[in-house]
Length: 203
Image (cartoon, rainbow, N blue to C red; front, side, top):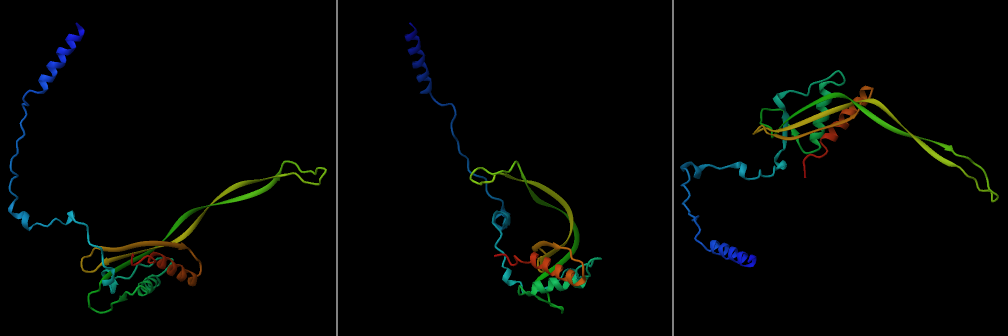
């Protein structure tokens, strides 16, 4: 009896599957594009073209202003270090009224860094002695000691802008240790600027 009921339910289910589908697919034509679509170019739909850094040949200070000086170094020291770094990369300063290819800004600041140094101090522990063959016994251990100290560093920030569009072209910063004498400070500024510009132009 159960077998007959099961067979009957299976036949009814199969018949239901073969019935007509009440859902009918319909397709409608797409609406026409607006008239202005033919003249509209969506730049965001395409990747930006790679920047040609080779076309930048000359530079001038942004807004005609030298880098600001600080109590640690004057404006001329920073300007000279940046100018030398740009010159090494084929960029020449313009001193007349011709438009430059790049506009440059730079600033220098002092910041404090926390440094940690780990020293391992070793000592002998356990016991020592000799067996009948004259061999010694012992054990060596080390105790790590972490010291934290403050260090003042010189941070230089260099920013390059496309003179035509005003868009940023390059931005980098670097730091070096603060040095005491005026000659050492000039070397520190030059070192920090060279670090900041070391990857320009990007390959």
